[in-house]
Amino acid sequence: MNPFNPIESLASMRHEFGEHGGVNMSIEASTTFTVMDAETMPQIFHGQRGPEAGGCYLYGRHFNPTVYVLGRQLAALEGTESGYCTASGMSAIAAVLLQLCDSGDHIVSSSTIYGGTFALLNDYLSRKANLRTTFVDTHDHDAVDAAMAEHRPKILYVESLSNPTLRVADIRALAGIAHRHGAALVVDNTFCPLMVSPAQLGADVVIHSLTKFINGASDIVAGAVCGSTQFISSMMDVHTGSLMLMGPTMDPKVAHELSLRLPHLGIRMTEHSRRAMLFASRLHELGHSVVYPGLPTHPDHELARRLFRPEFGFGGIFTIDMHSKARAFRFMELLQNRDRFGYMAVSLGYFDTLMSCSASSTASEMTDEALQRAGISPGLVRVSIGYTGTVEQRWTQMEDALRQVGPAIELPLAAACQ
Image 1: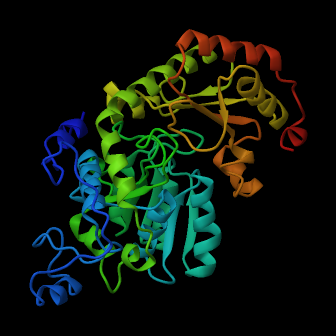
Image 2: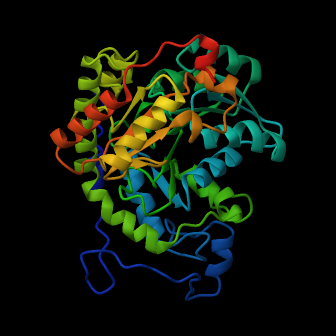
């Protein structure tokens, strides 16, 4: 087990007191910042002065003190030198890809990723930025190595826990492949805060959608990039920085709210994982098609045991395949409208349960071929388990909904894919 401890790392940071001695830091709402000496301003513009060099700030789109502190806190959690925060997870992903690549460059990506990221790579960046992406099964390391050798990409892109199929990336092995071919390994760690630290396993850049588990209340949209100080500084460069020039700026009020939620992230992740493990185990015992990394039947269970921190479990998400879109819809409708078990909604990490049929929602940007390649069936229901209500109350509701939907009817393969 890696000796790095994210909770201890965050706790060892300098505490940011409020302006008048408050135990919480102040919100710096200014959009622009003054200097005491006129010579300081050109030094900031030329990158000679900044938050880490003289404590200088220029403009809210460049660096904001409150957002800067949150970035440092997230860097402490991920074990990176630096971090900075953005207006959304997608803006963080787009900014990183554009910072690392030039027009005409190539990217190799996992074939199983969030639908929005797939659309960004497959559709948008190919047309707008002349960036090409090859999608591979990143669990086939020979296939990854071959794709890297053929295309000589700038980036190997993966999710630590794939959305929605919940396959675990062997980050250490993938980092070795990426670095051998001169590429950066970029890891989206949205599903696994605290559970795994990709940078400690060799990843060069770690991305989060803070909207999800780190936020925890489904009321804020935000993102983050964690990496080396050199890389974060390059993203804020006034001439070539993708965060500076594209402007996906986080509001300092949002940064303040998220900072106050970090201290109880560990408690929340532990309970999410505990309930997910319980539900997945019971569903498996009943013979349902359930996928969860904590189950010994999961193809990456042993890998997860090696990579994940045991105190935070195996994550708060599991999937259950209802074998058809109609059955999946009926199952979710019963749980929401009859039982108040949770909500049919995208996103994850909320304190209440969120359910979605991935092929018809968060992965709908993918083609039928891409869905099949990723292993996303029409009836796959992704469940981000909440921690409201008692465990037994929620389990009784789910068990009854499954009885109401009834057993799956075997269909010919062609019909099942409709």
